[in-house]
Image 1 (tube, rainbow, N blue to C red):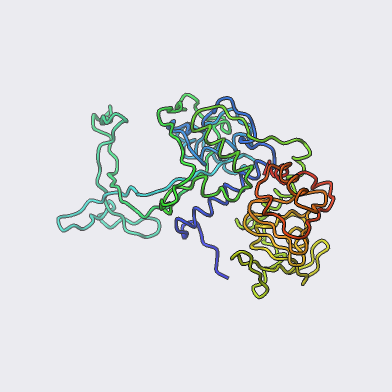
Image 2 (cartoon, rainbow, N blue to C red):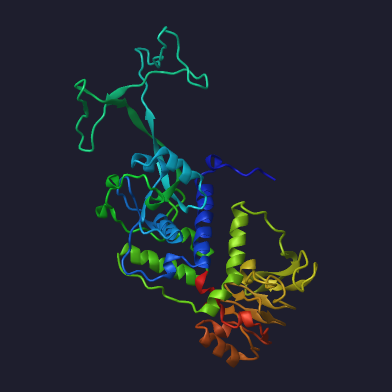
Amino acid sequence: MSEKKTWTEMNLEEKKATFGNYLIYEIIKSAKEGYAPFQQKTETFDRAYNGLNGVPYHGLNSLILDIKQKEGKYQSNVWASLKDAKNLGASKEEIEAVFNDNSIPKAKVSFIKTFELQPVYKLDINGNKIPYLNQDGSQAFDKDKNPLFQYELEPNTDKNGNIKINLKTNQPYMKIKTERIDIEPTLESTFLYNIDAFQTIDKSKIKPIKVELFKKSMLWHSKDFDHSKTHIIFGDIEKNFNKTTAEQIKEYLIAQNNSKSYEPPIKLNETQKNQVDYIVDYIVEKKLEEMGIIEKKEDKYKLLENDTAELKQTKLYRIEALRDFDDVKVGDKGGYIESEENLSHTGNALHDNAHDNAKAYDSAVIGSGQQIYGDVAVKGSVEVYHDKDIRNQKDLDDYMKKTSQTNSKEAVKETKAVGKKQVAKKQSKNNVEMAI
């Protein structure tokens, strides 16, 4: 097994995937614990921005900062790195205390880096670096025994381009001259802390938000656009959420783009809020495994490559249990599925609900409280979570109408779909998933 790469060893795509996992985990966690901003009504957006320079954040950076503002119950949506906090006057002791206090919510934001500023060395007439010498004329070295060389200097200027003058010497302040070097695009990240986490910051140094820098964030890339070297956007992680959550986040970001009020498109009652725990806990656990925070559990089942079926040019695989769980025993075989996405991942849904030659494919989902038998074929975008028998087409049509689903005529063929009567699964999956 290969060793896990460090951040600096990762390429851009690997960094985007890793940072995407962080975003997905924080978004799901905020929904589960009840502080997700996209599940709350917003009359006016208090845009997150950097307190040192007044620059607003956009897109997923803005979303994660809004989430952390809600988590920390901060009044302000002004943010700063520890270095920014130092420049805003925070004491060294407080900066160290904030850094070491894991109870203080902090947000990780990212950006695409395409260049570096490198110091310009002084060169002799032959183009060689000029050594930096000690007082005795010997070569100077840094703490790692690397030789030091002289840099080119240039006058320091203010934001208007005026040279800064030392009033005592009447000479300009000097700084090391730098040059911009283009590099292969890479993703960098940094932690930000809310201004309210610091008591020693000089509030007079906090810049107001620069509204002229507001811009609309892109949610999706066009199909023919090469986004391999671009910043991570909503479309890159959308598929990791159920359609209800994805719709909420999308509408939230659109409202923020247009500076409009936001009303969550779907709300939950208390029963539904309790039901989402079944699904949310699984998703959070899987993301923690992917991020290496917890040890990955042994898989429940496998798809049998040597036991397949084909339905309308779609290859399906029989499922077999790899370990005992609930009332399923190792070696038990279930029905046929196209992929694990066709099963709900809660309770014994990974195995116990697809029997005989039953089939689930396309974007169809079978819940753990639902069982399908015989030659039933669930397909399209149908999601089957039910509390009574579905014995004929009329029963199915009524269920689809009740849960606002389409493709009902494609959902069942020949035999029956039988639902277990479980109190925790009485609501349709459309309702169960609303807060994930």
